[in-house]
Amino acid sequence: MQRNLKPLADETFDLLIIGGGVNGLATAWDATLRGLKVALVEKADFGGQTSSATLKIIHGGLRYLQHLDFRRMRESIRERSALLRLAPHLASPMPFLVPTYGHLMQGMEVMAAAMLMNDLISCDRNRGQPDPDRQLPSGQFLSKRATLDLGPGISEKGLTGGVIFYDGQMFNSERLSLAFGLAATAAGAQLANYVGAIRLLRAGDRVTGARCRDLETGAEFDVRATVTANMSGPWSDIVLGLLERPDPPRQVVRSKGIQIVAPLLYGKVAVAVPSAYTDPDAVLARGTRNFFITPWRGTSLIGTTDTVYRGDPDNFRITDRDIRDFVAEINQSLPCAHLACEQVPFAFGGLRPITEKNIDTGSTVARKYEIYDHAQDLRLAGLLSVIGVKYTTARFLGEQVTDAVFQKLGRTSPPCVTLHTPLAGGKTGVWAGFERAALAAAPAGLSATTMRHLAHSYGADYKLVLDLVHKEPGTVALLPGSSEVIAAEVLYAVRAESARKLEDVVLRRTDLGAQGQPSPAALAACAGLMAHELGWDAARCTREISETETRFKFVA
Image (cartoon, rainbow, N blue to C red; front, side, top):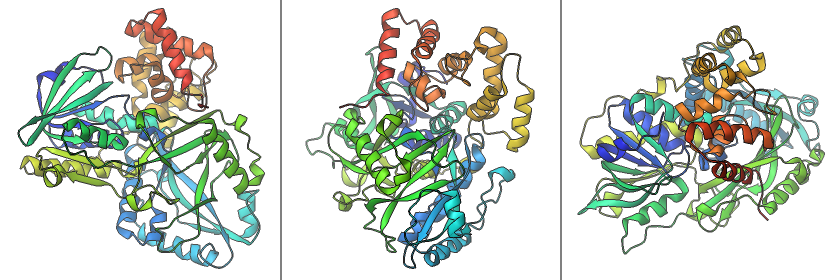
């Protein structure tokens, strides 16, 4: 995947997607595989906004039982299984512990019924999954003692036991988002990051594409398409504003969600801890809403907050107060954590849409994706707006959008094939055997730790990184302070994965900044490698390092 703007300006497309989050990338993949000519522009980096704010959980929709929403639960179960199958290097099962209290809605009896119903509704969850390590076990019931052994420090007042259910966890959510884009590019889609739509083009009552600006050079050009899909998420109302209509579009209200990286609290299971929030929409309300403490590569990920965000989404930042408030809530709900703000090396977050009726309540995030055909409300043909709300179901949303595009084009759609087509790097076969083969293929100078990291990050495509190592032996070196990331990954990110800025490599192409700010030496080494590839001068390197360091700081 290389950034090439010439085809965008020179060709006419069936579909232009504005927004390169996981939903836009999944749509580009699906539409291209079904034969459409697809362009996608993203004003920042692929998957760099809301899609990077996930808690890295692949949800099977157990919470939908509270809403008796069995259809959406089945969707989530199917898509969770699909990600475990299509990207086994980046997705694996994770056990979740939910303590039970008393004998009412938080009690063992209700949770036992929920577990049994979940197992029944998801009875086919492992169908088509050849890898036993990627299959999801049935739920389990635990005694009070066993619950405390797995989750020491949880509240014992009224504790009756616990249940274990299984969801999926992402090894690296940023690379999973990128895998959709890499797969779309391999199928023929034209994708470009750091290209912003500045005006929607019109011919009478039809939208015909977008005027775009290369944010690196300032050059402007038109991307023409029969159908344009606004998939910019929290920016969707702003993109509609590019129509320059006298009647402003409906304003999107946004929720701010934050996750933090913290010292490891629970190493064997993810633990659901009751938070201060309640869910006003639940038909079968259990009282408080949970946040999750999930073990992730030697740390705990804790999330998610949910507060109304007012203002320009471009100005989203995580503040010191956000961290203080969240740490205080964690310590109130789980006193044994004894968490201090100084123990939070990194936090990440993003904005999500809010349903209007929930604006002033604790549970604000919309649960259902929406596809708006603006021929209906704005009397404009050729324009769709798409609001996705759940990372897990991005592939399915892409399928639905592609169906809608074919309908708009007046063409019969070929069958969707993404449910059974591996993502980039996903052709690994049974994971245990694949990992053994990767370890055996390690060239001189690469440790088993690094090889495991390459196998997880790139899947079957790790061999492409090794090809670079063989051609340029110096790239086998670890970056300063890292036990896993090698110089070859930086060069590969620039040459094959459209990395344009230092933070693209540090935060989204490699694991260099996944758990906190890298050392100054690591940032300097990474910037130096990119400078050689992209022609940066010393001033540009200094600016890139400064901007990347800012991503690890909380504003006052």
